[in-house]
Amino acid sequence: MNKTAPSDSILIIDFGSQVTQLIARRVREAGIYCEIIPFQSAEAAFVRMEPKAVILSGGPASTMDLDSPRAPQVVFDAGIPVLGICYGEQIICEQLGGRVEGGHHREFGRAFLEIEKDCALFEDVWAVGTRHQVWMSHGDRVTDLPPGFEVVGTSSGAPFAAIADERRKIYAVQFHPEVVHTPDGAKLLSNFVHGIAGLKGDWTMAAYKEQAIAAIREQVGDGKVICGLSGGVDSSVAALLIHEAIGDQLTCILVDHGLLRKNEAAEVVAMFREHYNIPLVLVDASDTFINALEGESDPETKRKTIGRLFIDVFEAEAKKIGGAQFLAQGTLYPDVIESVSFTGGPSVTIKSHHNVGGLPARMNMQLVEPLRELFKDEVRVLGRELGLPDSFVGRHPFPGPGLAIRCPGGISREKLEILREADAIYLDEIRLAGLYDTIWQAFAVLLPVQTVGVMGDGRTYEFVCALRAVTSVDGMTADFYHYDMEFLGRAATRIINEVRGINRVVYDVTSKPPGTIEWE
Image (cartoon, rainbow, N blue to C red):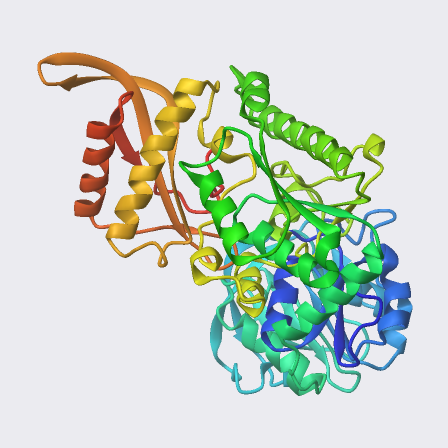
């Protein structure tokens, strides 16, 4: 994100893996600054950064495909430590004189690695003769090693699952150490950056803050910035960070699109006006948004409509303050990776996020996205660094499209009001039970399903409400929260008794993957 990297840094070359950013996470957790750069720009970044080590990510390509991505040769000629992961291992073998083939046994998901030999990567983590769980995701596999390499670990589907050239300090693994499903993966990456690359591990979030502030000042200069504020932790931290960088050149805009939670707009306005001396404009655009969405059931169309209307509002508000050259957003990495490839490399779209994908040319504005490389838990650390109150740092994530994507099927004002009331009761019960800070995200969903019920002596035909609660670290993966049934019974009873329009409540026990956290 900055022009000049710290002297102790690691370059991560991205070949399009969905989990490349998790490599960066693990490196940051080890206290080392790193940058993710797409393979197309890697050589220039290598020259600029002068990294102490390089990590090659996984990716969807096959080394046997015509024009498949490669690492710049300078990486191997520089004499610095290199670690290849999955596709990164295959590149190392292809470029240094080994062989990769397809058509062999594929491995996806949990596998077990047999440790064949000691090496610096395994030091104090794995011993020869032991067996350890790892996470695999590959179709091709290495069949012949380059000169100087030896096998240090094998799995049932990968006879070259871990290889090492200790003399040149080049290591490669077919599995993914960056994901939580490789339980010792973080220790292996720590070994690589500390033990093999010899880096001290003294980079902190305070340092990230200073780098981000410098980058914002450089990008913005004396221009005006408007910031889309939702009141969630992402946009709040982005606003505080930008305000610290450029002061009164920033104006925040809170758009009430009629899709917020109960009393949310008032709470956000109060927080920002009481605690921070940042200009804040509240725009009530609920009729505009709901009129455009009414009856729309396709989730991608909902997201794109909301994104377009946000831009229209920001454009109008920018004119009122005499024009703005920049639009700031609290976009995070999980938003980006689910929408487009983070670095422009080969990746697949899971869902479009309303604030990802650039701005229409007519706006003549540039995006400022200082959190684009961070995960939610890292943003919370940054928020504390900036002095954001715990009540806001700890808020559950809330999507920009709001209740629109928690109302599958057609949207109407009536449905939104029913959902808003159910959601408020659910969150109230969670707080009363002392569970709010334990749960990553919790919300109600109004399903496009009506069922017969009985209330008193009368027949009802009303909507089904689904409750969702998950635990997570970074939003990339999640598990459903294991409530006791007493809690669920209590919450369901309140919702059915207090919300006209709901006569049945269910609980969602789907993890991510295969589901997403949100319902849509």
